[in-house]
Length: 175
Length: 447
Image (tube, rainbow over all chains, first blue to last red; front, top):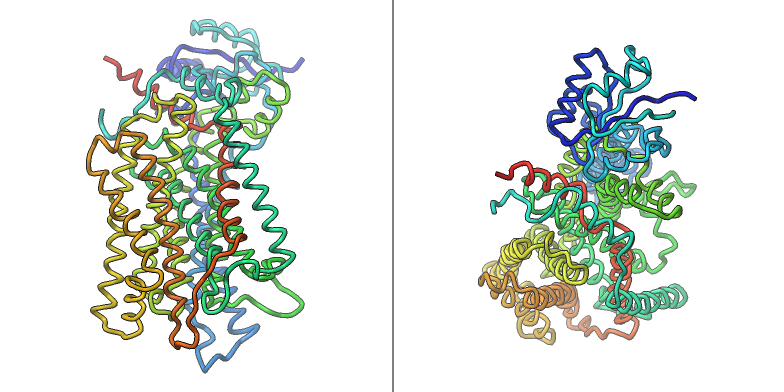
């Protein structure tokens, strides 16, 4: 049976941060912390801040705005110019409203798609769900996982290291 | 209690249990069943009305020349306006870090999505040949035609499309952690499956939370300008026309304020009903009602300023057509509409100056209903008073609604109510994730 890692539950958010520090001190690097709400200061210990989402929204917004202006210009000036009483074909102020809406729309869509991709959502099967008490993380439980792909991973040693933290409970997570 | 602190009780665990129980175990109750029955009947009436409309055309409505816009456009503007408060409470109050919004934002966002769904029906059906609605979208077609980019109708198409998509994404992003909470509490296989799929495999991992918060901030920052632009665009449908009473620069801000006003009234109505039916007093407190009522009072004054500015501009500008329109509005055949609007929207809210009224649910429901009715009357008044006296006396005429006009209005209310009633039973009505965090902060800060 392959193993995904070892999951442990601690009492509260402070204990969770302390457990992350303790495991880092032991040399573990691939840790995942689960909590019922965002614990301040925890993210910095576990990985880089998400910079790609704002960037994607910016790029998406630019594409939406410039693309929509271009589309309207192309349609009204190049592809199907319509002379109504000699008014200019490139009446750009009238192109602004639609361009604003599409700017916001594509910024949101791009940000959302990159958010989903970077969080690997949707992934309906997660090995953690095999642990019966994993649901505590969506109530008031604070859980920590040492992943089996951690360079320092060795099943028996991980179990001993985790037990050394005196968690409320811990269990091996089957893959 | 400070402004920035959320007002509710309980630990993170209790919050989760109470709100998920609403979906998983607590019975809906008799009130829910009766309301759902009535709403279903009205929705059936709407479906029948749509079928008749598709078969016989927009002639079943009372619209004719010169009043070619009637109930349908009033309904559209009214419903899309009601949607605004949800986005405002979710996004603008999030950006300004108003913690108290956490008890309101979920059902307010749902209200936005449903109000938009109902609102979108009307402009499409009003096209006359709704099966050609897709012609509004730019796409390479064999006829080589493009939409008319300078038309407010096309701007509206983009505004509504963007608003619908962004609102649904915003609503769903906030829901994912809460669906995970329901998934983890569900006991039946079917519910585990449905909520498991809806939760998309959310685990509450630290980096997941961080990305979630980043996306929420970006969405909020984009939703605020979006919602202001959408209601401005709705106003441009009117003010791009050259008609006296419509062709005015005050329309965009006036419509934004009117939208927030009617939306606040709907949020108050839903908040009072939800908290009474499902005993959510510890989450939706008197303080929430007080703040919502203050918001409604403040924005009501902006709307009242809009009425005053319209009259003032007409008399100060001295344009004979503007003056004639204004005189007709104040004293003509539809004067009762104008004065009812003033009574509902400007006078009834003055009771909210008294703190006791702002925390009295019954009084708030009465005022909210008056405001909702007043805002519908205002939309109808704006349409009909500018149209019924055209520039030439030969094109003067009254508007007489038909049975189908009334059926569409009642049916749209029924559809909105039905959607909301179903939402209450299948989706967590309060934002569990946010309330959990506030609860934890409270527990942490306990002396």
